[in-house]
Image (tube, rainbow, N blue to C red):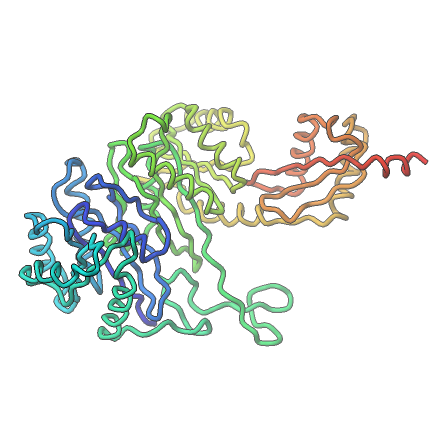
Length: 486
């Protein structure tokens, strides 16, 4: 089984690492800012090219105003360069090499593996005609196997850099991507051998021997207020090797995580992508620019995931902010699981009472299961994966119109449901989350309490644990009403 190579972007703060990362990836995955030290956690993305690889964006190595995290960021960046197969060393071409640049060079010489090539990337070279002059200014650094000039915002030199990365990987004897019928490494986000489908829909071999593309691992967004233990939970779910190579920053200081960070977790031969997000604070208009970007990343992570895991602090009362964050997940139509972290700090009857209080405070999303857990002791955490699988099934569940009609006749019998009791037809739409369409005489007469009654009965019969249910009421056209009266 071949290894997926790792290409790490290393450099001092504010040399354009995140901008370069976004340009290679093709989307704004990392936060770009003029503020030194914006990137803290390692940001990873698979690049599908002739020789696919994992691209890492790292925090800046050197002095920043963020003294609380400077040593932690340096530790993570050092881990990245120690495990990298190719290093992209970024240098700001608009400045003379600084003391921090030389510190990074010294670190590269001491900590990288000897066979790992270094590509020096001179960033912010907006004038192509100045390319040769700029390169000559930095050759005296005497580091790197090649020097490339780029302007990431204008995409100058990016194609040359991509070609050089591929050429470098070939020299290191990495092989091109395998076909889908062959085995795939764990890092690639696929599940080993590609599964095939039998005619009965189960995993197996098709009669026509045609293969099916592998299932994409579910994306699970870990959200919540700052400092409730989101990164600690992701770290606790990692394998020992992952924690050694790419741990997430953990600190009692609120706001440690700024970017949304993907972590691939394997559990019982299945894969899950956990997206650790920045804590959502109350007033976005009062936040710094970087914090607003962080909030935007969190909102995007919710939109792009299938299941949202809301982490709350079991030692604190549910706040309005917790409710607002939960409402965001419900309104987005995502599956929802509530993790009551730090539950190991509560014992006996007090624990049951606390979980009951959490349920009461989040009554508007009572369909979401509550999982008491502890990131420190790992109590209850392994149950998360079974819950995720259950919520995913519920989110994609479809009920035939015949079953719905039979169920509807049973639950409306003997109950005064007004306009809904006169429903002529109902069906489930193709939308996700589960969406049901009711055809009534006049949709304006349908009451929220009546729809709530239907939803409660529907969940009792068909479960739909962990997912919101949507209702669409449609009025019967007047022409059809007249025909029914005749």
